[in-house]
Image 1 (tube, rainbow, N blue to C red):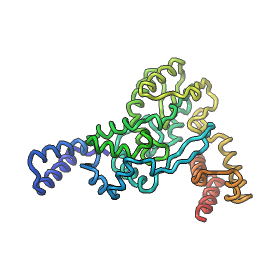
Image 2: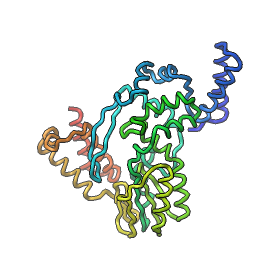
Image 3: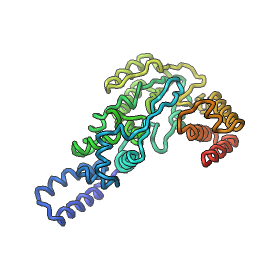
Image 4: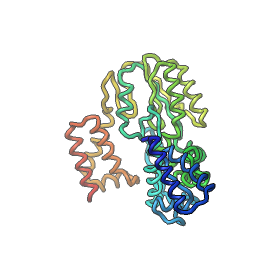
Length: 346
């Protein structure tokens, strides 16, 4: 939510009064107000130095410095299977770092603008809204940005915070709390929102390109979608050129141009004419999993499959919640969610 000119003026005057009441020199007040004004106009909280940041978050300064300069010590890493095959590395922050990331997300990132083309990790948008936009289109082009989060470097994040108005040292502190091994980690609280914010320029350029080709464009995380009555092959090259200009790469193995009015899969949702449904294989896999859990017990099931994902149960509930979004009146799904939630309580 953008602040009005009156709100900005009032906040700056409140700071000015605060400095005067504390006896600051006039030239210092002028410098501070210049710094503050930019942050307030960009809907960002004022942060002066490391101790101030630690007080805002509510964490010890020495502990905060450890997280900034040795972030690897504050993550637990594990791998999960990708739907398309292979493994995806997940880096989960420890509670102390997660608290810092949550503060950054709630007080800074959440208030920043993202493109209307973005549907992943956006409040009031979802896989369903993304798929619905492409319903009823004859042609569909699907492209994928390779290693999306790891390709977004800490330098991008530092520049973003500096553009908001933060001093270089504060920008570095904030960026370090959001990054691992100099890139966005898959699993950090801040990564999804940052990926959308930092992709604003990319989305705008791809949006303009889609208008030129008279097609519809959306992005869901690292997945790019273009749909329309006609999609020429030249669009693939044009999209690739734009993506690579940002130092990103297109995963050519996942580039698919579908020229048919038959059913298409968009972010895991089947789209046919104006109707969206779940693919049969999705339902079948979940149904089979639930059958084995009920027959053999949850612990026996995960032991037999050698499941190492600590969030396996949550992921099953998430899949059922997704199914319920598509079919809200499905009693099997409703009962299955309740059943798994009872297991979670045990």
